[in-house]
Image (cartoon, rainbow over all chains, first blue to last red; front, side, top):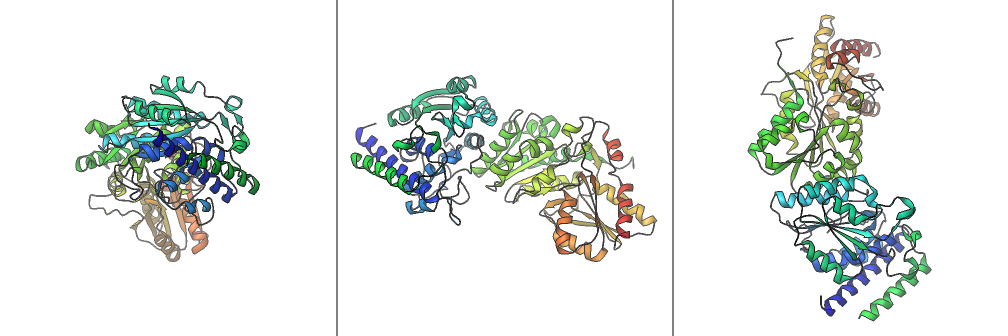
Length: 278
Length: 314
């Protein structure tokens, strides 16, 4: 990717992060850590990869995205808003009564959300169903999903992984947001699924390990995925809370909102990042 | 009785899928390694390219069905009631119910009439579980004819449908001219002394109970409540007003099923005695299905006894 395109993606990702902080601060609850860790992946998919049309969110054979780690909804909402599906001002209504922006993604009311998720382990099965539908009914579209590294402790993920490989769903790509932290502590402390790449390989997926904050690597992995005849798992090593210094690698930011002072600091940091990019 | 044709509603389900498969190609069928038992195997044989076996992974099957439906396509998925409604309850609630997707769940081997497999496979809780999901339609056909018509009707509905079928061959009580409408119960016998509201294989028993009661000079109304959700409130309230006593009959726990639905409605709208016939908060066990139905009191004679008791409570 050329430098200009990369800079544009970095700009978009920074705005996405600002939207995440805006939403979670306004809601006084939510999940900033895991939203910030997958922000670059979602930005690349929605700004550079997927065949979508924000003006026609239900376009029949659009590519599909399923946020299997549904608690990262603030990231998805911010990406959708910044991509033009709805006004970025709406992000401030996150989790509030009457808002379409539910705590977890709601496909019935939010433009651009392809699947309702939130209960971990279920999104990947829906993504598998979508990929099967594209193959069976000739829709020809691609399906992308993002799983949490804690989420893959759910057995259903591996049921889905088995099926996807056995049915040759080469139009399915699953990212694992490998930030190494879940609610109760580090992945190792809780119930690690490592080695994650070897597990997906054992389930007959092709696996690629990347830095989940490097757009060149995200692009290269997705390009490689398109050449293969099997589903692809991209194990994206990420930093929980990425982009906000005091949130980075802190498990306490999994599911808590910044207070006013922390909000000001986070936004100041992100604005500074934005200025260096502009 | 031996002359009456008997067919399992699961067989009608399989046949209906094959018929629909010949008429339209806009749907796929999923199963979880029970196709030979659920009878989706008939569809698999007729249309192998439109059938997907998810293996022994019911939670994933429901999620896959949700994903297919989310792309605007029709899908039928099937397993035993225990593993569809039971094991995959939360997948049905969150991945199918919450987004109100057009997934048809064909749940077979419901109730204690599963027989020899015993308690782990005798699901008497599925109606209760499915009833709690907003927007879920629940249909429990009484015989072969109704099961076939119900499957066809389910394809025209918007939103998820839970269809309950049995393993045991049961009497065919309706002719081809039988009219089936989702959510609209059928008054099979007129009467004003008491109303028997039955569903599934208990409908045939209710018709026998009607005859038993008639011999004793009691005129029972018999209603076939094939759709448990949405319940035909109008017919239930009308029966309460006109007959003053109700007996519900189902091959399901008395907690949360048809009896529960009728009681919930009438306690608020028109309280009359409601006596529930069903499985009384206990697990089933192994044995031949007909003997189990005798043992668990799911027979015409039991319905008739309840009806007489209900009348005394008026």
